[in-house]
Amino acid sequence: MSEKTTGYRLEYAPSARAKCKGPKPCSGTAIGKGDLRFGTLIDMRGAQSFVWRHWGCVTPKIIENVKKKFEDASELDGFEDLREPDRARVVKAWQEGHVADEDIPESARKPEGEEDKPKKAPRKASKKKADQSDGEDAEEEKPKKSRARSSKVSY
Image (cartoon, rainbow, N blue to C red; front, side):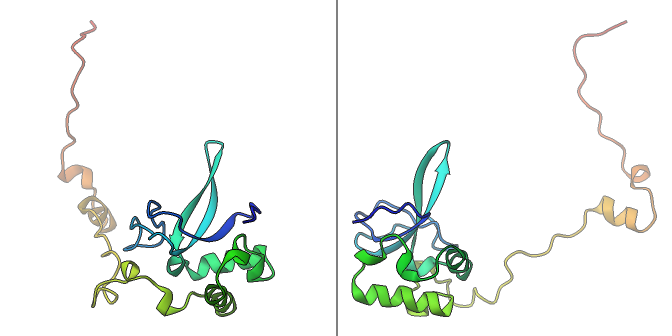
């Protein structure tokens, strides 16, 4: 096994302890022992370590960033240690710019019908902002709250 410290690594999970750092809903789920995983090197308070995600949780943006750093998928750390079918999966994702749909784990798939829902409902403007936009002064309508005073009295 070679250690190239390139910032990215492909490998088979040696245990089922690592949690996926991929997008929700998969984020936080365990990566099974022997599953192909993708690591990104991070520096936390001077100590370097990898954050892992399932191979299927690698986003097109990540592939785009890795392509900026390397000419070919075979340059990725750990590529040479992969089995041939997995090498082909990585090369295909490299060429297409995204991981194949069949590689996405069940834990990363949203329940039926949830894809159509908006991520967050837009927030409504507060009454104060709404009133000010109408040209009214919100300060007149709502008195200010009094603040607690210190027990020390100065004369």
